[in-house]
Amino acid sequence: MQNDQLTQLSRAARAAVQRRDWVSVAAFANKIQKQNKKEPEAYFLSGLAEKGKGRTKPAIQAFNKALSLNSGRYDAGIELADQYLLSQRHSEAFALINRYQQLLTNSPLYLDMAARIFSALGLHARALPLFQQANQLQPGVGMFRANLAACSVLSGKVSDAKALYRELLQKYPQHQKNHYELSKLETAKDSVHLQQMQEILQQTGLSAEKNIFLYYAIGKELEDLGRWQESFQYYKLAGDAVLKVADYDVADDIAVIDKIIKVCNVEWLANGPEPRASSQPAKTPIFIVGLPRTGTTLTERIISSHSQVESADETFFMQLAIRHAGGAGGIGDVNELIIEKAAKKNIRQIAQKYMADVAYRLSDRPLFIDKYPYNFLYLGFIAKAFPNARIVYLRRNPMDACFAMYKQSFFKFAYSLDNLGQYFVAQERLRRHWQALLGERLIEVDYEFLVSDQENQTRLLLDKLGLEFESACLNFEKNPATSATASTLQVREKMHLRSVNKWKHFAAELEPLKQYLEGAGIITDT
Image (cartoon, rainbow, N blue to C red; front, side):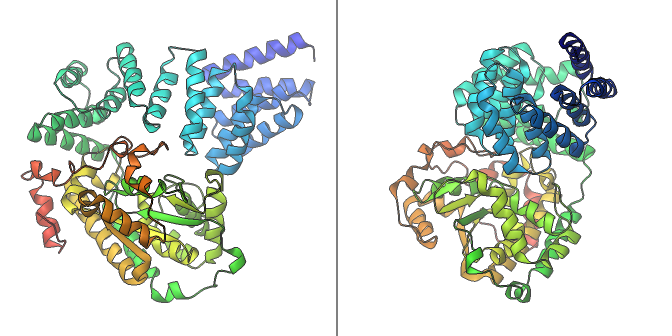
């Protein structure tokens, strides 16, 4: 094929990509391929067409073919990594980004994509310079600026993030998500931003389900200003709006908890193949679990400040391994059937998949932390798969824990006080089951004790983990590692008591929840 003809077809195909006309993209790819079966552009375009249609497997095949014909095609390499990520082939995605990132110096689009893949892989420190480079090459692109801002937050660069969000809001003053992100970055000292957001609500007149981020942001800033009742009204507006459009029944989640209690019992834990000495991982995991907003991130930062420990941050890899063993594959929550099937499989299968998936995040330290709060569901599998693993379970005053979840936009069981109460009681039932099943293997940490008696509780925790005390663990706020969590800002502060008994400002509004928890026998320190 003549170069000018290839150029014309390629340009036409890329114009079709911009229109998201995947049929035309595929047609142009076929034309190129028919004239030259060894032209990598044909397979790259074919990969884009398959990606656009949501067909991951043929997209992977096409991008792989393009790379086999021209290994220097960084665009095919990054696109392939993106498809590997969608397929939960994390190590392969990481290897490709690692290989091609040095070739991206003049491509803001693929710098941004590579950075997003690094972030999705939990490697935010690797993502940040790529986001920065994309913005330097092509400043003023809203998507690039927003991605850089989000990564700056996770990297502890709060001043940079605030400047970026303010810049974005100058350009897009009604962008609700950016208002929400900015509201989380500082404590409101006046009502200037609050009034701006309330004016947007009045000006746009959108339905409630389209105002969710603004409701949460307004609620947060009203809380900052001590306007408690008004604040709660907006948190409730947000939760109600989510539930209006969500396809969620808390009974489904409670049924999974009950199935876990039934399946992961004493006999199950004792039976099955003993792990071979040779199959034990060289690195020892420390699983930090508990309901969200109970201090899991604080505890992770304390322990990961130790010279023998690194953090893999939050991973979904145990859940993925259980889904895989249960025949489900893919991503998403587990259900009763998955738990039942996975419990019958050889536990080595789960252990080996987990370690293979997490390996790319680890260095040479002997212990690593996985701080995914919802791993509290899988402690039976964890204990059976990793006899040497340490397990740390966070507890917090139930009312503080519940309110902290209720006012966030992340937790599907926490959008109503009714659902929240039911889920908390079910989680407490499961925690007590693990307590009885695992005994001293379960290291329980009380958030209130930790923040009120930092040094003694830190020493005690490290001792239970088999670690020598190191003073760096008391200065966890100096830990430079990124943190992908709702607590990413708080963990960069020194230990404080500001969050203890915070729920009492909302005692009247939270009274129904309090009564429910008391009726269920949950002890609250009120």
